Amino acid sequence: MKKMYKNTTVPSADELADMTDRGEDISCFFSNNGKMRYPSQKIGVDFAADMLRELDDVAAEMNVGRLAIIKIFLRHALDRYYSARKERVRTD
Image (cartoon, rainbow, N blue to C red; front, side, top):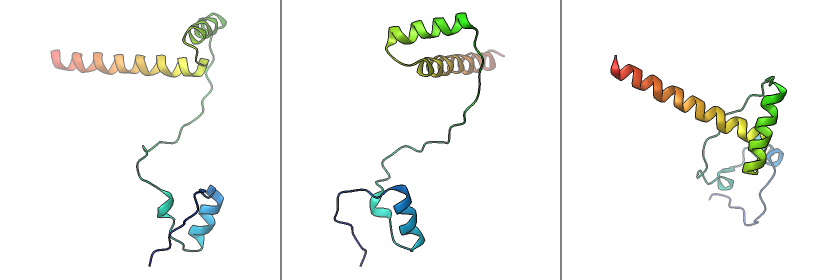
């Protein structure tokens, strides 16, 4: 019979790793309802002071952090690039 855990506390990652090492089934702690997240990678980017001021102004206006604005704008620019590239391929 499968061992079920009655407690409502979720073990830490280290505790789960120890349980796995002991061969215990830890599947009851996962719902498989989440979205797969790919690992992120940190990079260093230099911005001109004027551009940083503009980004900070927009971030303050939207009540989010500077990094969020950079990610939003970069995602928007990439989407526009791919959309334009797809249109170019159709017309050729």
